[in-house]
Amino acid sequence: MDSVERSAIGYDYARFDRRTRVREAVEGNEARALHMPKAETRAAGIKLNPGQTAVFFTFMSILLIIVFSFASLSQVSRANEALAKQLNAAVKEGQMLSATLESRVKLDEIADAAVNRLGMVKPDARQITYIDLSGPEKVEYFGKAKWYDGISQYLSDMLAYFG
Image 1 (cartoon, rainbow, N blue to C red):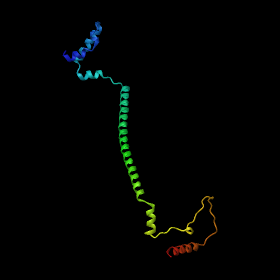
Image 2: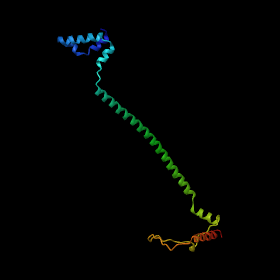
Image 3: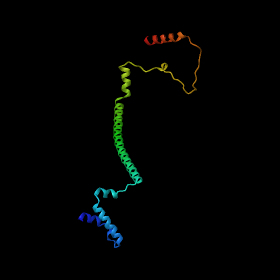
Image 4: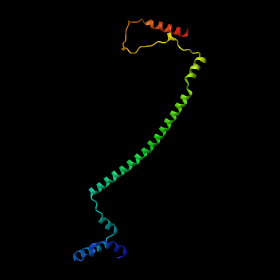
């Protein structure tokens, strides 16, 4: 026997048993192991149970699913963080633009431009009409109007607008 076989056999504690039938069994196993090809020795040591194989592959599948779900979760988290940064930047830009717009819009300047450059005037009291919306909503029907009444009203409104 070479040193590799001795070191592997040294862990077999049955070999040191003093009973003769145990010694004979160990020596018989050693003799068979010396004459068996390596492929047969390996195959003789591996006994696969279909139930154990199914449990192993199920466990490995669940493990792979968990690993891939954590990977996709981290990818989505990174994308979410990037979008949150973009949103914060857009909100800040919107606030800055609103502040710029408010600083440029001055009601006094707008009123001055409307009166002096565009010739607008403030309405007087007879042009202002107030509507009371506190009462109940109702519709009153006064009768059937003629088809040409609408046309004449439209023409008179146009003449008033252009005149």
